[in-house]
Image (tube, rainbow, N blue to C red; front, top):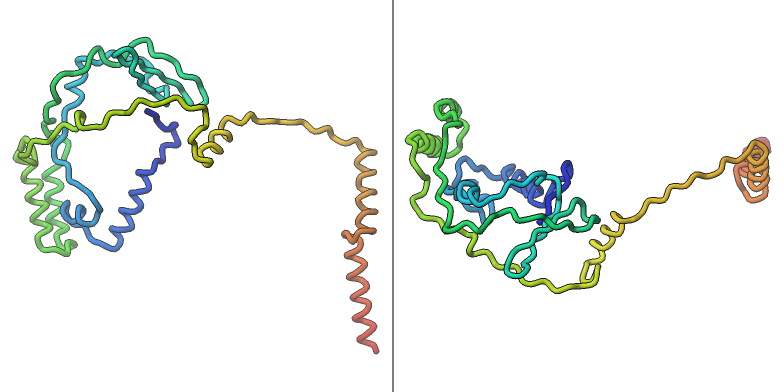
Length: 249
């Protein structure tokens, strides 16, 4: 499990927002249902599991958890061994313990919605004041019904019972040992080699006054004999003189 470096957290999912923006430039989405129709394979989530309360009783206190960027969990003798490291090029370090005392039992409860931070009355006034900008006649009423449902402090927006997905996740197969770099695409290998490349900084010896003067003289001679700057000037003078001669003929 890896995390991005602070300041470089632009991930593939971020590029999807530009696609959504382009879609909304050509299609209107005045309510949740409209937005679901615009987006492909989108789903409206109305219930969340209270995982924090479910897991915190079995969670150990861990210091400096935000410093490592990479974590590795390995099955060892029926248990789990945790390893971590900073950047990719650093070696793995073993954690002196585990994040959990034991695996939590059962499943988390449904998180009770809390709408106390939403200014419902203010938003309702804005919806009524801006009702003329909606192209669909029922969009205003949909928003008013939505805020009325929040104002009624209903426990959930959906009466269905969601399935806790943790037990449905596929298990990671046992990985075999491969030599470093084997099976790696060339582009990834090139990036890793560039990251691990040792920089080389050199100081060049400055030329003395006599050496610099000799170099300028040699360069000037080379220009005159090989068609450099001096040759270009002579050529232009010859052409100008030829034009003048032809003019008086």
